[in-house]
Length: 131
Image (cartoon, rainbow, N blue to C red; front, side, top):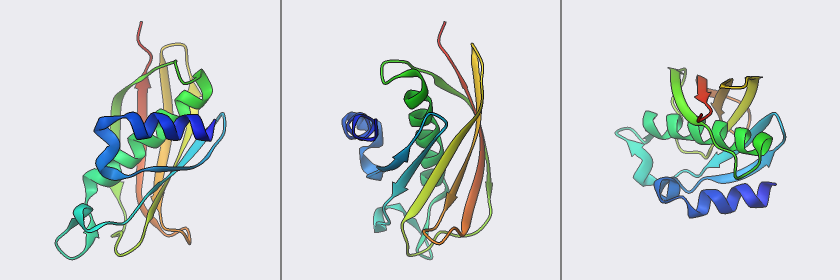
């Protein structure tokens, strides 16, 4: 499934600029790597907030795809973010977990962190399945 999801990410034009890599995936969670690159830095060498939010959104989308199948879909309904510490000079990893998989709504959390586990941001995410 990891290979299929990576191919999906690679084909998605709206994700290309981030360079996301699927690190691991299961039926309940997905971990992405957001490679550090200067194009994503804000002043001070810190990875910009929208890039962390995109990582959280994408990781949750892929966790849902892993549960429903690649052809199954859901759309972001709500994304709440708390920025906890700056991500500076290192790759960012984002782990998304599905908490509730309803018939219509899907709830989950995502955390962006460093390789050693230091937390950069926490996200709560709601997706809705198309009718």
